[in-house]
Amino acid sequence: MPFPQYDAVHVISDIHLGGSPGFQIFNQQKALAWLISHLASQPKEQKTALVLNGDIVDFLAEPAPNHEKSCYFRPHHAVEDLKRIMGDPAFAEIFQALSDYTRSENRNLIIVLGNHDVELALPEVRAFLAHQLCGDSDAARGRLTFAMDGTGFACRVGDKNMLCLHGNETDAWNPVDYRTLARISAEKKRYAPLTPWTPNAGTKMVIDVMNGLKKKYRWVDLLKPETETIPALLMAMDDHAVTWSRLKSLFGVAADFVRDKHRGPDGFLGLEGEFSDEKASADRTFQHVMAISYPSLVSAPSAGGSDMDSLLGEMDTHLAKGTSPASLALASDQPEFLGTWGAIWDKIRGRSPEENMREALRGWLKDDPTFNPKTEDKTSQSVLGLVGPEVDVVVAGHTHLHKAISTASGPAYFNSGSWIRLMQLTPDLLEKEPFKKVWAVLEKGDMDSLDNAVVNGRPLIRHIRSVVSIETVDDGAVSGALATVEEKDGAYALCPVPDGQLSF
Image (cartoon, rainbow, N blue to C red; front, side, top):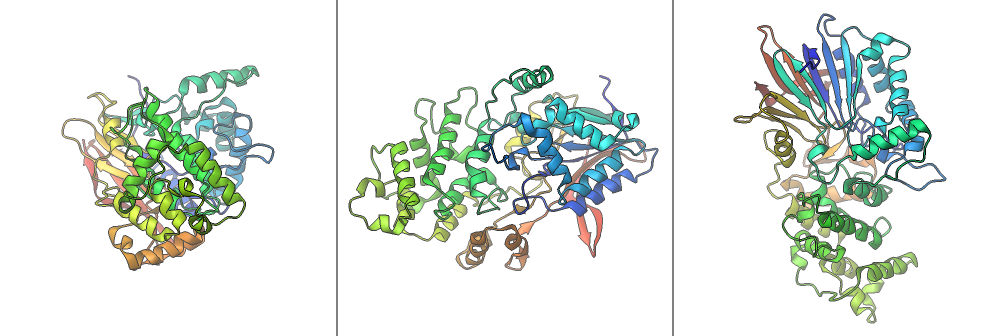
């Protein structure tokens, strides 16, 4: 097929530019602007492509206008959202570097749609971004490609076929409804009423659960692996950050997901294989996940036939009146209220949130290989299952975890990781004394405390500024490499990741 041909293709993803100051999970503007400028300065005769492989901006992180509540998809003010993001001092240098890159000879920019930047598929949003990056230069505009239809971006490097996919294409929690998206795009062109947008479970999780937590605990989406630790995070937060109705939202989303026969359980919250669609309910998923997260509490009294809606509503009413959990624990007239599943019972009794968090994380993160670049994960396996034998290399993103995996008979697989802050709680940090220091930082909740935290002699936050490069070498062969942008004494350099080089 007549795919575009390049001498070198460089891939980054999951930058997540967006959010109000203090809530931004990306803080690597200087390093990223350096990388883009570095790629622009390569020899002009080399035809180069930079692929932004999804979730480059984050519309889900943007605050809603004052007259609107938070929503899952915001086609009416997406251009204004993007304009604000591009003008934010924390991100402006990046867009300037991209503009300079796109206007450089033989430099091509490809933008792949992710699941946090769905609004980029709208025609007026693309037009605005193209004008900001390319101005009136037809040559620059010709070097800008939008891959917005869910099929990814295919090209050739030397004699090798390459495919870039964001990675959410195989994630049952985060699919994009491209058919409805195309319909809405057409309706906007016609100034017609827009088809309602039905969010996927992952988007509902971000808007209904995570964004509320971030009002105090700004770091809730930095801990990896992310989905498995959400119950522990929820149960450990104080009662001003976590309402019991928010817990219901979490497990209601999980139950809806399990009941959807078009999406099999995908390992989220340990639900795979546990429920048929008939048995899924917020109550049952809640009990199941709490038993996994807090094994020491599995023998706690049970609420029996309590109705979750009324129970959680009662909890919220008490907390809204300022009634403390400790007071509720002493109230003898609340046996059913206090007899609720495992960790809720223990939380209301006044057990230390620090211990709740530590116990749950030790269970979820035991022997966790998440950060090992050579470890296969569900995304790598499912993405590789999409492609035929003619594809030589696949590059995905979405998981925020960089990978370089050689397969026995299929394509080479890379994941371009992420440029956001990441937090890895290793087993030594989950021991009792070190975790006291960790918890002290987490309780403060703000990004500055997190950025400056050092526990057991190393920073609590990791910056893994990953780049995947597929390029021809002197003898005409094609090689692939995973590298990171490292800084020393104010200077940046691309440094290979050990065992991150693959040949194919």
